[in-house]
Figure 1 (tube, rainbow, N blue to C red):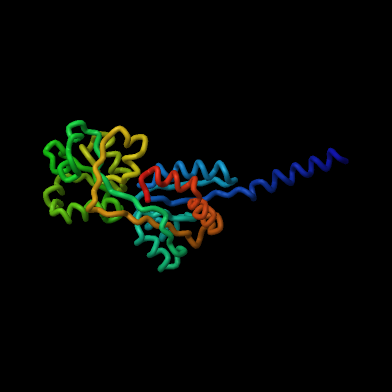
Figure 2: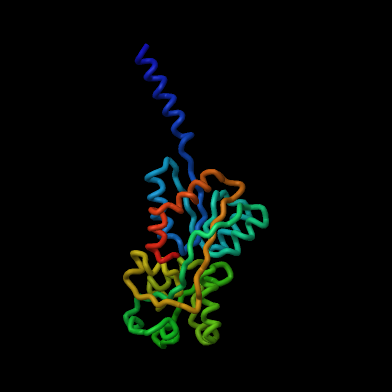
Length: 244
């Protein structure tokens, strides 16, 4: 009788276990890739849930969401898209989760001695410059606005190589396809980014990044993840990648 009771108990536990675990589906802006991957690893270590994440430009992910993509939470690189999702009934009120910075990054030794970002992109040795498409990528838009503010955009425009996200822009410079790229500070501080040099762009200001829980998804799990992001352990990872 005791063996039978133990057997039944084990089956109940096995059947109940999947119900305790769930998969959180995240749509995340490309600039936050490295930080998000570390956050997911830490979250899964202390929670029974799995996190599946898709990375891309904010505009591209926004388009997927309004077309019905099955995400639970959206981490954008701006305030505009989450605000639109909320206004259109797709998501909850957005929350600010990070403030990022735009930088110019290069692993070219010829550019290493340049004093500032303006000198880098105007340098004759800098023949090709990666940038995320401003229309869909907030970091690309901030970079373009900084160049326009400094009256440099028309001169630099022929050098620009546009990528669909800031992740692609970083890859242009990392692979050598571009001499330098406009990227997020988080990418410059990543393991790959440590092999090059970066220059701050004060004129670009901070990139306010907001997230919103999506109404058609697992709202309870999404809110649990957002609440966990406020813990000291999670914030430590976020600040290590240069976010405020």
